[in-house]
Length: 382
Ligand SMILES: Nc1ccn([C@@H]2O[C@H](COP(=O)(O)OP(=O)(O)OP(=O)(O)O)[C@@H](O)[C@H]2O)c(=O)n1
Ligand SMILES: O=P(O)(O)OC[C@@H](O)[C@@H](O)[C@@H](O)CO
Image (cartoon, rainbow, N blue to C red):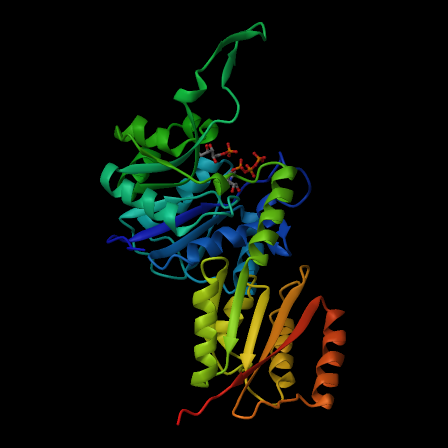
């Protein structure tokens, strides 16, 4: 993916109360697979290396909650900013932190392009971010759009149909959106209170105050916003499905074993999201910790050690220390390679019993351990 040649940052408005969803907890802090909704959008921005700073705008009473989420899930490049009473006011506060370098804890460079993305839209990929940023660089503003599902109609004062719009000519404005920073900031500076208190469309502000016609970019179906309770259930189901499609292949550092891991990665990557890493399962391996932070639930551990339970035990220990809620079964597949010249290989009965006992114990923690014995006979050429 060709990164952009411009300084890019993101503002994630997360300062709402979630009235339409109901409940005491604002929807951005509701858990999906045990992880707050807002954390998924932050994670999505973090995965994009060319996004420099991520500004999360939350209401004053939720600033500490947001900071604890950042700490718990190891979010980086994130600055928390106080929100306003409306979404536009929150976004404006997020932009100000660049223009007026207000942030106390780090010197934030004003970006050339700023992404604005609702923090309650968890499914956003690098591809659409790159498209809207690239388009914003050329046009001054850009936004993701989707086909309308329902037809838009207008009612008269009598509450009856006045007219309807030809659905094919209209689109739903979604997120992410992107702007040349100066354009959107100047637009917000010129806004009336009515704009700030009742407006819902950033692209409109760029047009109204900066005569900038945003480029409209076809977005994918999963850009929708969590608004009602049903959206939360749908998002959780999609996250579960995504997690089940992810595998982390872990091999130790031996070349032969790492090679098997690499070949497996190459053969699987067209079907599932797979990551292959060769590490010694050290307790403080940050790479693995990163993967644990809610990114992966299926692990395939390949090694050729005689006694591998220690490796799996270490992985389980790290899983438990990463305190990700194991609401969804974690699958650990222990692949034991027996690379030898003599065909007769038999894993010790004692070792087998040990693995079975261990698997029974960890199953109570929602961790499913499977063992796979692969025998590779090495033929010495004459
Ligand atoms: N004063 C506000 C209001 C909304 N938002 C954020 O803007 C995004 C989209 O707004 P919306 O879906 O309307 O969220 P809420 O205002 O919380 O929802 P509701 O209208 O149902 O109360 C959300 O991430 C929300 O947290 C914000 O930052 N500041
Ligand atoms: O009115 P809400 O705060 O629910 O939604 C705000 C935005 O997400 C919505 O207006 C999109 O169409 C993007 O502009």
